Amino acid sequence: MSFDSLGLSKPLLDAVAAQGYDTPSPIQAKAIPVILEGKDIMAAAQTGTGKTAGFTLPLLELLSKGPKVRANQVRALVLTPTRELAAQVGESVSTYGKNMDLSSTVVFGGVKINPQMQKLRRGADVLVATPGRLLDLYQQNAFRFQQLEVIIFDEADRMLDMGFIHDIRKILALLPKQRQTLMFSATFSEEIRTLAKSLVKDPVEVSVTPPNATAKTVKQWIVPVDKSKKSGLLTQLIKDNDWQQVLVFSRTKHGANRLAKHLEQRKISAAAIHGNKSQGARTRALAEFKSGDVRVLVATDIAARGLDIDQLPQVVNFDLPNVAEDYVHRIGRTGRAGSTGQAVSLVCADEVGDLIGIERLTGQLLERKEVAGFEPSTQLPVTRDTRPLKAKKPKKPKSPRSEHKDGQRSSENARGNKPVGKNRRHTGGGTNKTSRRFSKPKAANSGNK
Image (cartoon, rainbow, N blue to C red):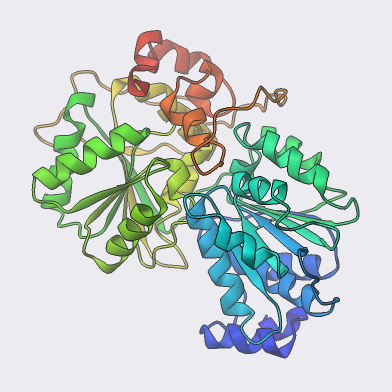
């Protein structure tokens, strides 16, 4: 199959060819025709398989055939959970739409709002936004939605997480009822799938991989280690293996700062990226990491959404995520677009419940490799049962959580910096007797102080 057979016009085909692509990825081949037919869609595919182009190309095609955008109006809205992902999607819209007479704007917090207001008052065919800043701009009459035709949720699982759902419902209440809704994500837990279906009309479900599957191009293993020795172990792994570009995941913002400082003190260039950093600092850290000036980028989950780094060879889970689905997103930063990568997790006894949840979610046992000098004082038990957990019914939304300074909901606080409910603490959606047996109540929250 070629892009020519998908129903795209010449301006788009020329833009695709200019990027060096001639064959659509599986998610693109399945999603593009459905979107061009005007149907709602829920599409799941692993990170790095071309999801962004999978909705950007047909969106531009549809908009090119419609009326011109009016002042203060938006024809298509793309919602993303993070600034970095918003910028990435905006770049994709500009790249593929360069031969078309369509306008696009990207808005997010952490930067001055006035320039964004001025751009929006001219109208935008495509608006890419984070929820908090979008609502701020709407409340200041920067734009309206009378002309809106399409809304897209990118990283839909995080967008529909309880840290965002209140803003999402506010936004949906502002939109015309006659619209097309597209949802794209690497993972759809059963809880999120149920919630998502309440927001779309008769969606076509498209999936090119088993639910919550990890890419075969990523080699995964874990290193059992005591919590107090993790920093030293990471330092040794980087030096012994001569890792030159490593993306490290920390559960908390303070932990990310502390680890970056630890590495710098040991002559390993490092930078932290998380929700408390200014947009300028986040942009600079990512640019230096991509260029090789920074060897290690330490990130929290919310900041890492949208980090598109070509040929990233190594991902390290310094802390396992509270929510098992986030493991799939994390290691999806490597092994992208057919390249290979490695993902290693440093696991201490306190994280056994999280490990069991991840292994049951992905349906695979992760190979254990101890490192000499860092053998753990407490051995990690082997997961006996990797059958997927039964889905729980979705909970009713709780009261809104606190916001970042930029007006964006803090899913990071919801997942990492504050203790979470024990049901999600261990399995990302369910509990099991094994996880409770190996996780002590006090230890479960020790990483959240």
